[in-house]
Each structure stands twice: as structure tokens, then as C-alpha cells.
Amino acid sequence: MIYKPKTAVWEITFKCNVNCIHCGSDCTSVEKEHQLTTAECFKVISDLAELGCETVILSGGEPLMRQDIGAIAGMIRTCGMKVGFISNGYMLNENTIKIIDAVRPIAFGISIDAADSYLHDYIRGKDGVFAHVENAIKLLHQHNIVPSIVTTIHKLNYTQLPKIRDFLIKNKIRYWQIQYGDHIGRMSKDTMITEAQFFEIAKFILETRKKYADKFDEVSGADVFGYLGNIGTQVQGPWLGCHAGINAIGLGSDGTVRGCLSLQLDQYKEANVRERSLKEIWNDENLFSYNRKFDCSMLTGYCKTCLYASVCKGGCLRAATVEGGRCNPYCLYKFEKEGFSSEEQSKTNFKKEEIFKIYNPIRPLPKEFMGK
Image 1 (tube, rainbow, N blue to C red):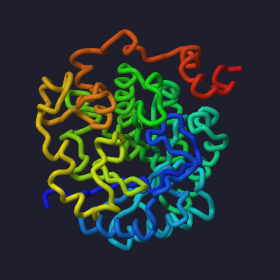
Image 2: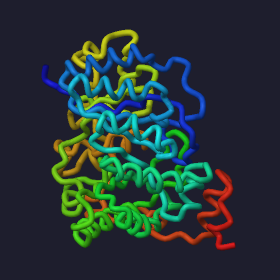
Image 3: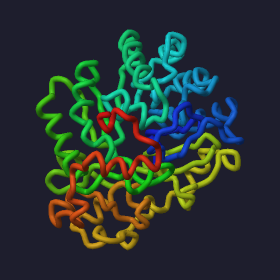
Image 4: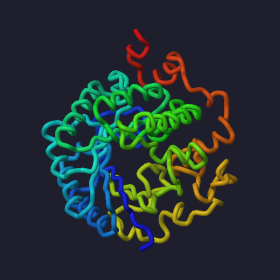
């Protein structure tokens, strides 16, 4: 076997108890009809172990909404793999923390999209979420479980980054992943950060690493911040192309297999574990061809003639395909060399009135935002 899925990210349920404005999967309060049963999940877990998977990250939706989440996480550990969670933190309480504690996860990821509680709750579409997050962090610390924070940035919360950093330092959070949302699922293209904001976030990541090295063990830009060049290499480190179908795999709650859970377009559905075993799907030489059989002729746009084309392979594939090709338009090397593509894309700060026009038609902004 040439390839090994070292990391699996599993949308264990489509069901969610919040309504995030940027949700890429467009999750709802109702589960898909064909969610895998506990027994089917156990078979997938067994196959992952046989394939050499090392870590399984349980996501959603909201993973704690599955009543059998403890059994599933326990099976992952029984099969010798590490387990982690990505959650909105709302359901983490004195009862559910016992389930989490029993499997000793490598980390418990919680989403924080603003340090102002009203803004976080607005983005999440539910009052009181921020208060639950604060409580969840306390519980995790009390049980010696590592809390890891994930922040998804768009125009509305771009200026919140320094405030979020202060909040994380105050709450002794040492792992922080910053990513930007793009227009898949529920998120509107108008809400995406500009190229200049993207560049400034990269610099913010580097500044935070340097200035607060004693406060954080890791501040990362996920796979969407790169690539190569000067600042790209500093932020991302060595980038050798998308990992989907190479050493990473994404699983849907209904058994759909993708190279990466973020590749939501239908063209990236490889197969379903109800039709073929996961081992057979992963070892099929005709699947995951966009990466396993990559050549530079697949690239589009700027990436087609880039110096790093054969190494970078167009950057994060999700970010590239959302724009209709194989070239991530948000590339630090490109901006270093070429600058920003337009006057609008060179903007970093937007007036509240401008933000109001973008977001209020989607979801009425809270009065606190306008200072009333």
C-alpha cells in the first residue's frame, strides 16, 4: 500500500444545535436520513485501524449530539488510534465531560469566532453560546483535557483577532488555529475576507508566535494560509501540496468518503462505505486521482506558471475549487510578487455601515454592533 490515511476527519453527524453564518456543510437541526448506525461506524473504525490511521477527529454538525458518541470514541481508542473532537462547546457540561474524559482525547477543539459575546452568538445564530464556551474551557482544564481553539474569519470578525488572542491568553489556551471562511455551504461570497485582510492575518499569526511564544504552543493558519515564498513559508512551513487522499481522509455522516471533509463539491465524492468497504475504497488506484495522479497540467490561473507549481500543486484544494479551478487565489507568495488584484481587495478595514449592508440581509445584526 503506497498511501496511508494518517488522519481521518469524520463528520460523525450532520445534526447541529447552532446555525453558524459560515457553515460549509450547511448543517441543520435535523439529521440526514442515512446517518451511519453505531455498528456501521464500528466497521469503519476497524477499517481505519487496518489502514494504519493514527488519529480520528470527530466533528459535525455537533458531535456531542450523537447519543453513541462515547461508544464511537471508545472504539477508536480500543483499536489503538488517537481521538480528538471539534465542537461548538454548547453541550459540554458536567455529564458530557465524563464521556470525553473516559477516552482521553489528544485535544478538544472549540470554535470561537469573536471575543465579544454578542458577536460570537450572532455568528453562531444562538444566544448564550459564548457563555457555554467559557464554561466548556473551564471544564476541560479541570479534567486536564487540552482545549484547542478554532477561529473562522470573515469580514465581520476580522478586527476581533487581537481581542480573541487576549481572551485565549487569559483562559490559558495554548493551541489556536485561524482559518478563513469561503463561500461554500451557507456562507456568502460577499462576507469573505479581502486579499489584504488575508495578508494581514498571516502577519498577525507570525506576530503572535513571536511576541507571545511563552503563551502559545502553536498558532497555525491551517492549510489555507501559505504558500512558499517568504512569508508563506514562515506561516505554513514546508508545503508539499494538498494531503487529501494521500495521508488524510474525510468521512461524512452518511458514509460518503472524500479525500478531505472540506471538499464538499460532488466531484470529490469517491464512494460510500455502504457500497464498498473503506479499505477497498482507499486502496482503489482509480480514486483520489486529483492528488494521486497530479500533474501540473491540472493547474489553472496564476498557479499554472508559478515557480513553485510542481511543489505547491495549487495550494489548499478546497479553497482552489471553490473558485472554479485548481489555483488558490489567496496565496501569500502571489501577493508578495504581484500585489492585490483590485482596489476593493486591497481594503482591510470596513466601516460598520458597510458591514451592516453585507450582513443584515443575511441575519439582522445585533444592536450592540452598531453601538446603539
